[in-house]
Image (cartoon, rainbow, N blue to C red):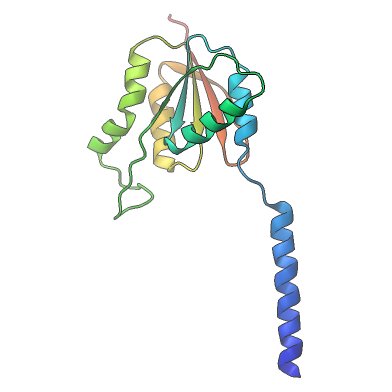
Length: 160
């Protein structure tokens, strides 16, 4: 009898906790982020996905977009994985160069006056690498949050 009562209390508490979780749970808003990126004119603009997994979701929602405007150029940073250090805390310098190579080539081409960086579930080290690399040449214009998905807009600084 005592265990039946405790079991019912535990079951009720679990059900209330699960209901609260499901009530407040939100997914990344890829549809909103994609619509925002596509709403900006694509001329001289590059979209960089910090880790390439996000590019697949962007492409999916862009293809489903009702009005399909011209899309900006896209690139993605490769997604390195270190089995000894899965959160990439100790990313060696030679790996940093390999990861940043696509962004460096795009910036050095001088073809882009705006770079939109899409950050989703990427290691903090990669976010900081991208920010620190763009900061000398580009000014951060905005950082929009789409629930665990950020679109950070950068514009080329005017030459002195």
